[in-house]
Length: 581
Image (cartoon, rainbow, N blue to C red; front, side, top):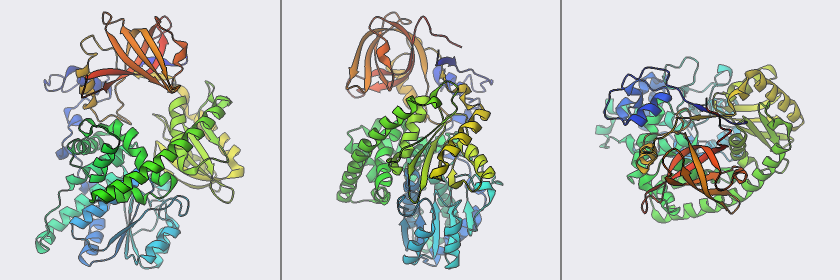
C-alpha cells in the first residue's frame, strides 16, 4: 500500500509516570513525543528561558535604551507576513510603554521593495529621518541595505531568527539571533516575534535597573500583555514547538481565549463568528493567520500592522473589512493556482513513488501566493516543494515548504555554496525558504534540487502516518477531545495526536465536491456511531457498509449546543488490507 500506518513508541523512561495531575492518555501522548521530564510540559512563564543567554543582548539593550533616553528617531522594519507584522506591533507597543517618543515603522512591499532591509526600504527610512533602524523578523542577510544605512549615519539593530548565510554576518551595529554560530540560547526555534519579545524583556529589565520608570513616572509595563501577538506570530511561522515556544504559544492563546488580547485580534475572531473562548492554535492557523496574511500577499502588510495596533473600534472595523476583501481575492486566485499546480503535479513523473521533491512553475502565477500553494502541494504529496512565479527581468521568485525531518534551508544552502551565482537571493529556516533564480536556470535548479534530495533519502518517511494508537470505548469521547484541544499547543515538532481504529461506514455524503461527511460505526466499541469528515481525499472509493481502518484526530463539533465529537479523517484503508507496524 502507498500509505503505511505506524505506531509511535515510547523510547525513554517516563520520570513523572506517577504524577496524578496528568491524565494517563496525555502522559502516553507526551511520552510518545519524547517528553520524559515534567519540566518539559511546564507551561508557566516562570519556565521560560532567560533573555540573558541571548548573544549581544546587553549591547542591543544599551543601544535601544540610549535611543529612548535621547529621543532618537527609531524606525522599525518588519516583514510582509504575520510573524513580521506581530513583531512590529509588539515592538511599537512595548517601546511606547517604555517612554519612546519618536517611533515609526515600514513594511516592505514584496512587489516594490523585495524582502528584508533592502536599499529601497532604507531610502524610505531616510525620508523619515531615521536615526536608528530596528529590524524584526528580517535583516540577517541584508548586506546592501545595512551598508547604505551605515553610510548615512543610521545605526542598525538586527533582530531575526532566520539562519545566517554561511555565518557571514552583515555589518550591523548589533545582531540578535538565536541561530548565530556561537549562540548560547538554548532554543534555536524562536520566531521573529519571539526574538522581539525577548529583546523587550531585556530592555524593560535594564530601564527598571536604571530607575528610568521612576524618573519619568512611567508604570513598569507588563509585557505579558503582548503574548497574544507572540502566540499568533509563532503559530503563523510554523517554527518548531520546543518547550520554550510551547510556553509562549500556550500563554498567548490563554490570553486570547480570555479576551485579554489586542482589540484587532478579538474583533477579527468575532467577525468570523467563532467563539473566542475555545480558540486553539489550529484555529489561529486556519482562521486568523490567512486573513492577516492576505494583505501582504496581495497589497501592503502595513494594513495588518495597523489592525494589531488600533484601539479605535471604528478603525478596527474598517481594517477588518479591507482584510476580508483581500482574503476573498486571495482565495479566488489561490484556488485557480492550486488546481493548475495539482494538474501539473499529477501529470509529472516527480510524484511517483521514488520522487524526492517537487519544483513547479507557471508564468501567470501570483508571486504573493506561491507560499500557500507550496504548503498545500507539500501536504498533498508529503514531499518538499518549491513553487516559482515570475518576478521581473527574467527573474523567478520561489517559495519552499518542507516535510518533517528535512531541513530545507540546508538543502538550498548546499546548492548555493556549490553554485554561488545561480541562486540570486536566498533565506529562511528549516521548514520554509524563499529564493530567486534566473528563469533560464529553472530546469537546472529542478535537477540539482531533486538530485540532492534523493541523496538525502527524504522520501523514506513520506508514506507513513504515525498513530498514537487506539482509543478505548471510554476514551473515544467528548471529554478526550476537550482534553486534547487544551493539552497542547500542538504543531511542528509536537504533532497533534492521531489515532487509529476500525469502523463500518453507515453513510457517506459528498459536500459540494469539496469534502466527504460520514456516519461511522465503531467496530472496536460495540457499535457506537460517530460523525466524521474527510478533506482532500479520494473517499469515493469507499462505500456504505464497507469496513475500514481510519487514521483520525478528534475535533469538537457544535461546542455550545450538542458538545459532540467529530473524527477528522487523515487516511482510510480497507480493513482487510490495513497493515499496522
